[in-house]
Image 1 (cartoon, one colour):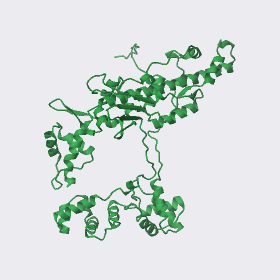
Image 2 (cartoon, rainbow, N blue to C red):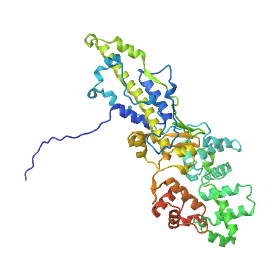
Image 3 (cartoon, one colour):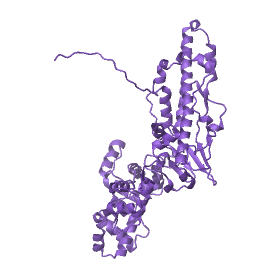
Image 4 (cartoon, rainbow, N blue to C red):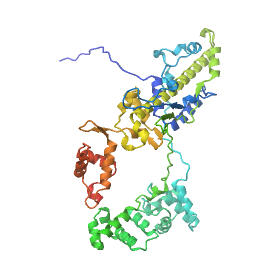
Length: 507
């Protein structure tokens, strides 16, 4: 059968994001620390955008009260007082402004420069700060207490720089010798490097510089001031002679070979569990990284009378406005374009573009404040018992859809707001994602948050008989008796999320 080319017409509806929407999406995802830098960069790139001389304090704070229950009525949320600042009313330009930008006001006539990205620049996922010495610096400080030759100091610094995040030395000495000679033109031998490594292993915390877990644990035992006691001697013997049995938790064999009583075996287990398999974590920071300083985007304060106050943290983000010089330039160019010279027309077009882009940015910042505020309002209303008492068990099952419906936003918008945002409360600082969790419904119709089930699971494991730990089937039965209707596979999933090993490894 011969093939024919047929031309057909179809009608398809597609949705494209406007430049304003694209910009708002990017700003919503930023925490306040990144927003500060983003605003500064925009002011440097766009001369039409400048900091306002005055700042309205109402833009920083939102106060609300709710004396009733948050889940009874839709109106039972934080009062709308102070929301004028975050109103989503579209921007209404003045007559002069509209005339100056008249060529660009239709949706089909948006300039191409507004559709372009940020010159390929990617915003980092997080910004890290540190006001303390790094792990590397803290280790170098201890070098001053050692009697090292200049050559040994070079070797010591290289060993410290070669430590992994957990404080262990994973590279072999032969590889380090080759690296020193090839990359740093430093000649040494494995014996000399080993001598410097032994001095490094005397640093605090104990276990630093170990080449494997067994050596790490032995170093911690040997550096203990009670190493001469019989208990520490037994610990050392277990790690040195019966390490394989120790890693497999074969305590029955260890007890038999050392001829220990049940009480001595339990005491030995407790002491060995106190050893740190990651000694580098005790220094606070890991090699090459800094502390991440968490800056809360929201501050929620609960008074003694139950009044909840929500504050949106603006950080160092200034109030923005259109530059007077740019607006005056537009007024001076007002008139028939035919009378303007070519350079004047190009200058007028450049000025229009900068003013248009600046206004888009100002409006996006204002929309961001409003969206963040109504989202946090909805979370407070849905989780009000927690904000009043601070008890984690009072958290209710809540998903993105619940917050989106209450705030009148799209689910994707709520997801972007919840990403990388933190809230400071009377009970600590929490990521917004922490308040979201699925739930189960009992036969009585009561909703139970998964976090409450996980707490019950954790409690069962902590109180179990160490000699006969509970397997997943037993845990499932006990949780069902407590009124948590979950299956065994769900128990296994929660157990893994909590970092609880299987029953055989909990002996």
